[in-house]
Length: 269
Image 1: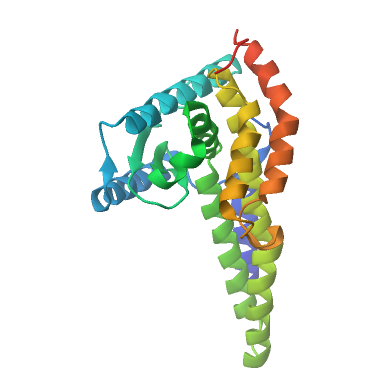
Image 2: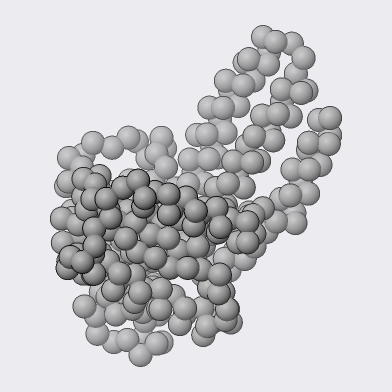
């Protein structure tokens, strides 16, 4: 049984790699878009039905306008870099939801929500573009499916250990150690790497869309100020620290502008 589980895990890891077009790296992904997207679309519609969606305001219209510009910029980049049709199954949708939580998120396939609580920190259209670029990047890089795939491997490892260890006391010790070790040593770093990747891809896309990438670090400075320094240590978090993000975004902004120039964009909002 143990060998069977290990064989299955290795097989899935070998046959399920997909190339991230923005990084050129192979990614772990067991789930095709045809399986993930319909589930995500249904969950998104359910969420909208259970929450207050803001319609017709200047902020709601700005969310849609910025989202469309960012998605269009992503498609231009993909088409010009040998990935035509990459977005054919995506169904972009952008909604502003009444909620004081300082957050925004994107589901696989391009379903995006901004909470009203993040708008004062975004401040303006360029600030919204920073957040939007990040969320669109999650969708482009299949981060949702990758997290599901990593979770499956984590579960396979747990099952294999429980099958192999017969002694109940040792099995309990394994479960505690495995749960903590796989979370701190694998799952949290995996999540932080996705956030960092989305920051970098998003910065590039927002620049191609005509938004100033220098504003990204400023947004995270505002985010840091709003948090009041209340954040867990980076190694215990799913996200990089505010300081890490500010440093990264500042360093990456010149390259994002250079990439935008390839598309004729030489001035930024």
